[in-house]
Length: 150
Image 1 (cartoon, rainbow, N blue to C red):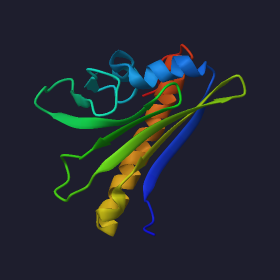
Image 2: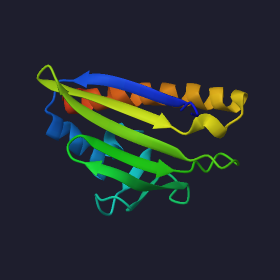
Image 3: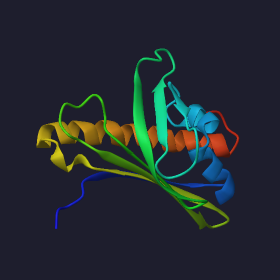
């Protein structure tokens, strides 16, 4: 069995799961916290839908992802191929929301790094891990009504 190499970040947020669900699935909310320099287009919230996210300053700089899982208000997954990489890398980004202690634990798990060379993989894992740490802090602040830290 091949080992899955992934980045995972998890954070507890003082917000109901339904509110957190909207924050991870609505384009207008993703624009605010996920990566604040990106903009999202989600035409329909159903498996098989093509999602577009792109640099706010350059509409020609975009990524396409396919929604794989929509299980409200528990799980939302996207499959995509990073354009920065020459190899056949396919990543799956999964948002998991679990009710916990009168709030919600949100976990982002992104896997698919197995095909990268060890050096390239480590660079990607470090950068992605750092980015998701910032995104999760932003999500927490967004849902708790505070200014975003990043």
